Length: 404
Image (cartoon, rainbow, N blue to C red; front, side, top):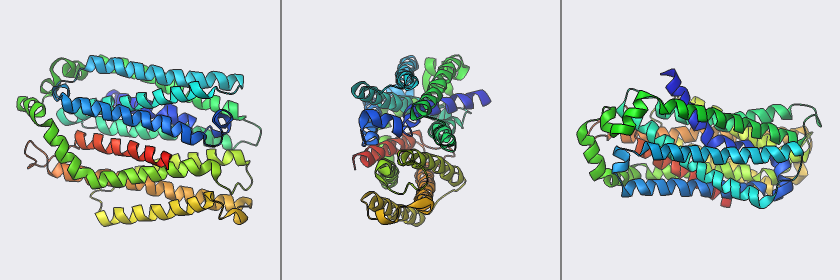
């Protein structure tokens, strides 16, 4: 049981760690992509992820039988291919960082786009299997393990970069910091290969591969209902979570937008200006993770509280935008300015994490109260369809924040 939890945790982390390991490495990557480095990276990553998730969701809607009995062998090959591409990007960046040479811009952007496609593919396919195991077996923590791994894949490289920032100036060069970050990503991907190999040998995986959800323990009529009613269920779940998905998308758009502004902000204080984006991006990822961890304990959040938190977030976004436009340039001197800006990002990130979990819990509570073939029974297990819709909303929001 613990090994299965660890497997989905590792696969969740692997789907996000490559891009998030490169995001804090602005000082090194800026040499290749210029000041709008995060914008170019974000467009490649999030457009790729959005495209992959939309395509896989459309294929599932067109072929509902692939959900009742998923082609796990094909899924395994796609996941291995996705991990190979993300490993290639990590090794590509690692090689140039160790040589302390400037990365070629066009190959880097192509690899980032493929990384986005790979990340979206991993999130969708691992999420499908985790959802089926959560819904149809005793492994009711599989989906939660994937989500926990997703957060870990974001926070781990940020913690590494933040520790490097605490060292005296000049101790770690931008190239060395990037090499360490890319190495962290490569190691996690190699571990995930082992996790996939272990999962492939497990009885529950083989059972699902050979007989689908019926073999996993679901009622035979559920497979028939999936084939006949998947589009209806998707439609109903989409309407049920639509408002929360829009709010979640706006929340992620705000998070990514504030991250994209970091190379344009003033208020460096006692640290070199080129390190400010790294500091603020690491703070964003770490405290967003902490906000989610605390909010996970909350149940049945009230809609008006979520609306208030979203409005408060937008106030912080406006303040950060004003900083980026130079309205606070006269005040942006000394450690006080740096502390104020960092504190703003910390509070903004905690709100982001709390709001993300609150919106997801609110949506799932509603779906769990209307479970069953006719939406008239209550379930204690989160809805996999709603989870996929909400995950897609967060990726679309990230893309919108990048474009803005």
